[in-house]
Image (cartoon, rainbow, N blue to C red; front, side):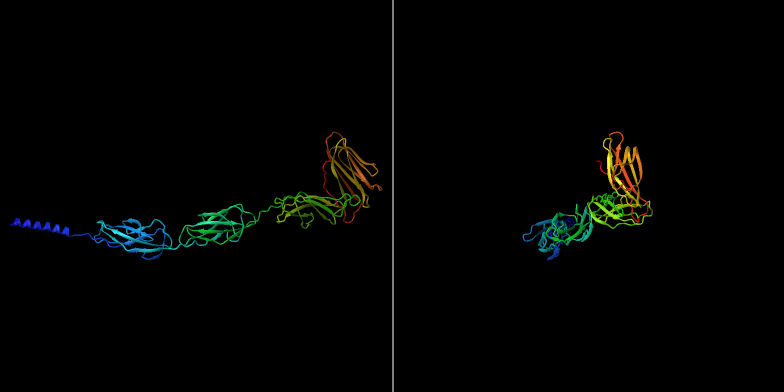
Length: 452
């Protein structure tokens, strides 16, 4: 009996297991729900979009997903994943409606097809207008080298931007650079005192925005002052009147110096007594400049010393240094300077000059200076030898005036030996016997002629 009962129980267990095994079946996954983007959503980004959904399986099976998406049916396979999300690698078209669905599979091969959802990508927005220019709009005094143009710009959609640069002297400047990715651009070799105009066109992959036209003006050309003038000197006219100069007025001569920029210039004279002339001109470099000035009330009959000099000012108001001073003495006597020359042993130098006796003069003083030994002679208008010196380097003659000696006098100088040339300096003074008002002038300047 026991044996029969055991066999019967075992048979029942086997039957139950077999029955249970045969009667249990697999359940398919549930249909995906809760999409992202939500069904019918708009203004969805077109780059880096991640699709998401919810899914479940009654048997807790591991699930696998296939995603289909397109602009119209039938929808191509977009990709597969074991996750409940999928990131689209490529950029989508802007302003476009896309349709998509998810098919879910369990590990037994059963599946469920989700609903067809849709979303619309955002429209493309053009870049914002460029702003914040550097140099600032209307700036002046800008350098002509290494000028960095810079600006600020952004895109509402976060798109990468490229720029075209327009630059020139026209109010509608030409394009000088295209599709640069930096928000700066360097220009060089501009002109002085010139207004330049520029603008930026910002571009994304679909649209562009032109910025306003900005401008700036470059600096004025740096200007250098005139060079320092040479020393001035005094001049007179041998033939005014009766062979003597106008000794009431000092006639000063200067030469306009070189100007590095080639500018015209004005000149003025410092008279050494606290007076300065007004600016005269304009002159070009190398022009001779004359100025007459009367020194009044000399301090004594032996003269008053003054240092005169000249200064230049270009048309841009840049001043030169003052010239080296030239010393003159204004006094109660008249001073002639016979021009320098040269002599040799076979060709003596003869200089004729006219002198007239005035009531205020009673003597003549003559100085002959040479670089080597010479013979020197002074002849009156009747070729009578008045004074002489032989084998001399430096001699001074004083001769008391004799009435009737008005006319052309002559100095003759001859080298005593050798054949080389030598310079000779001859100076004549006429001394007054008494004070003569405010007249009289003495020039301590050796005039030198070109060698004959």
